[in-house]
Amino acid sequence: MKPLSIDDKNVFDEYFYAYPPEISEYTFTNLLMWNHVYDIRYEIIDGCLLIASGNNVFPPVGPPENTLNALEKFCEMLKKDYSEINLTRFDNDFASKIRENFNVEMEPDEDNFDYVYNTQDLINLSGRKYHNKKNHINKFLKTYDYTLEALSSVNALECLKFTEKWISLKDIEENPGILKEFDAIKKVLENYDFFNVKGIVLKINGKIEAYSFGEKLNPETAVTHIEKANSEIKDAYAFINMCFAKLMSEYKYINREQDLGIPGLRYAKKSYHPAKMILKFKGKLQI
Image (cartoon, rainbow, N blue to C red; front, side, top):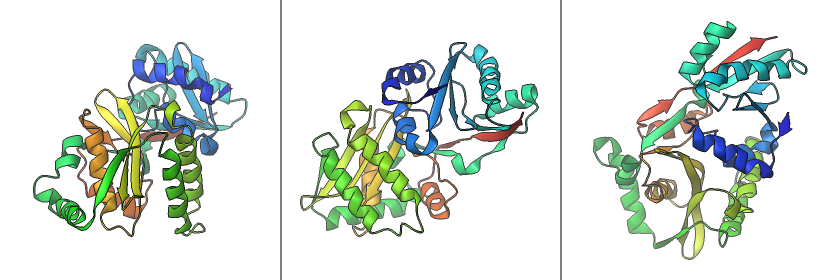
């Protein structure tokens, strides 16, 4: 089983291009930037890409007629090291196949459901349901003299310094995951031109106060990987969200990833009225 490395980009990009994913986890950028947390390993079996993190197995990517058998073979390989295998991030159709063929109970993994929005809704904020959001944007526009820049290798390290300052204002003991997120962000910003990402930077009085980056997930959908803003700049988060949507306006949808079961994050994501949710299922395969 091969450990994921920066040299595997072409392999993963080719599979995700040939078999466009719906789940936000499935871009090479996302897998590599979080690899220090998940220690991703993979195999190619029967023309399918199989991905694991420890004993956690993700959905196979490849010809649909081969995926179930490839998954079974991959799990057989993992039996050598684990007495239990966790199947995770599977869609409803594949979860049904697992129930039928492996006799495994697959249950909804609500904390990892992806929130998917109509891009034009995030840009225009039209109608009564977005009235408060629109007011926040209008207040921002009246209050601040700002400029926008494309995120690039020129300003990426400046964004990293902004992120360091952002972290310094947080309680690390209460939020230890922030440091892991910083390492993920650092990996992308220090190698910005290598990845397939696009981003936008907000400056006020010449200083970075927010930025966001993401990339194509599938032909209809972009995914937002990271969004950071100075919480002391009122409505900066709302504004950078809208700006990123404009940047990705060629896509019908924007996937803003999951809420991880965090109440405040769940409330914020629901407040933007997702067009749909990408449901994911999980289960335990006893060896």
